[in-house]
Image 1 (spheres, rainbow, N blue to C red):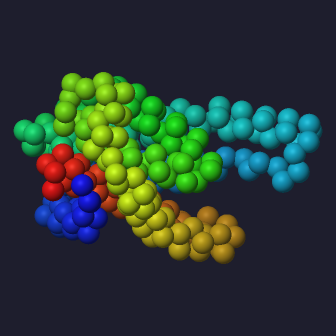
Image 2: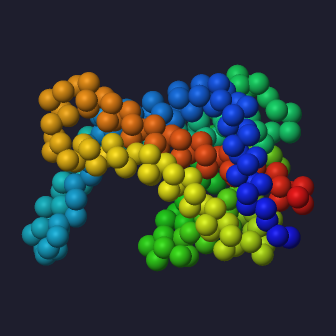
Length: 245
């Protein structure tokens, strides 16, 4: 079946316009705020040395260890909050009963451990494949409907959801590889000017809390918009593929 990519994007945009208040509430609380908190309170990981030898590697690993001791718990908590927000959005749109927001949040809380397993089983191979770029993007494209499948067709196992996603996307791998890149690129482009401005000011925003807050909010907003766009595209894609449109 030939996929109507323009139709998928149009469906996602219609959902965004229709449900802007709902999206703003869930994404603002569980995606934007954790991302903003991470930007403000979590220092960047120590960069890898440009020249790697035994001494520099040992120093770098000790710096990574200290960074982990200081920020690991906060990283985990904020990551779980963001994952919960993404899952709540999938429950709102993918659950056949179309629950209320409060109902979706309750279901997301109960379903979060299962979804965390799915996120790990999907995220690790995609990350490994992304080292070579093409395999990671291709796998990401083939797995675009896996979260809606996991929510809408539950109870379904992680690997059964994989197989179902691959079955739905058969014949559209290259097209979906490009579609997977759309929200990633969009969110990155929104956040990039704020990141570049902060770099250009070379630490000056830290002396001005207002400037620092604006830059941090811009970065978090770009990430949040990219994540919401990805969720809506995956939902729209799943609906079309599962109904044969």
